[in-house]
Length: 442
Image (tube, rainbow, N blue to C red; front, side, top):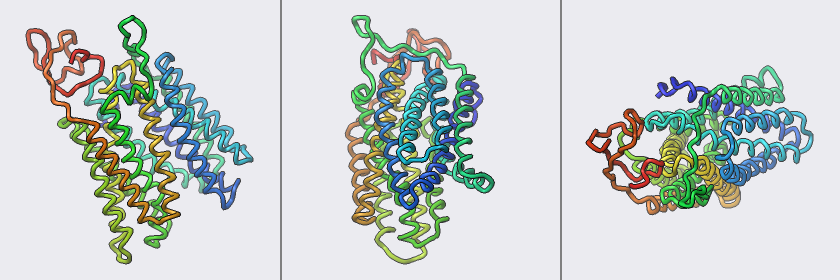
């Protein structure tokens, strides 16, 4: 899988992503400490509000960016977003009021809502070969999981020698390094938007474009299933470890590490699996398995006593991570296959916005319901949402039988022709329906 890093442009972009993620992780730790300095015992409320603002920024800003991003230079867009994020991080150590934190968090996350979908839409152009692109998606999944483990450890090491204000300096340096790497990457020429019959540009943009494609509507349902499981882990890990199991704070990191480990194992395995089976055969079973995992969590929640409960919780959390990774890792392939190249940025922006909209629903539900009604009702509610969303995805995403066809105008060595057979009229092969600009007649 690491062979994909031999591609210079992708290597620079991937390194930019990793460095920016680490910077964001440092900022997350520092924000928690800053919130405690400003609000004391109410720091949790401040952070909860900041998290909500983050999700609102993602949901609102990403579609707006998707509508105009294809008319703007992609390199300039990503570099500008990194510079805005660096500028916001510069000001964070100097805030003295809670409302200032909220304003800066909104600006920071709005810039992220510009950078991330644009970055995601560039990678398919950088790596047109599907096998290499699949491995790039797995690398991105691993980067997110490793960041969730590495950044807190790095922050803890830094805090042993400096104050938390210096963590924001690390964030600034991370975003500046990301911008420099994007500048150094040779991005491919953008594919133009498809033209309408009258010669104008097709006007499909953003969320309407996304919802016009059946399997992307299914992806929205899959996002909801993943958000239900992920919110349970993110919000209630500390409750399970401290209140239900009565363990120390260190066990919280162990539980979150189990979730990350499950996700990483699947991300490592998936490239070889997806070389042989279609996305649907991986993503739908992954989502459907979430209901089974929630049932296992219900047993851990209801049965009291016994040394088996911590290992059982770790297994459940790892299973959640594995199932979510089975859905999230191939999602980029699904978006890439479902829209023409000229509409990818809009489609990735819609995916970014709608997926975070799902988190915006499940995060507060996991917290409020757990506090008001208890963990057993929370497991039942979120498990029901995950199961219903997975079943809806099955209904929305019918199996597409392979269609045999011939490509007469693709050159020898084109990435799409891997496995194709040479015939008199060109290259013949078969696969499910694609909307990638190469298959208008299929």
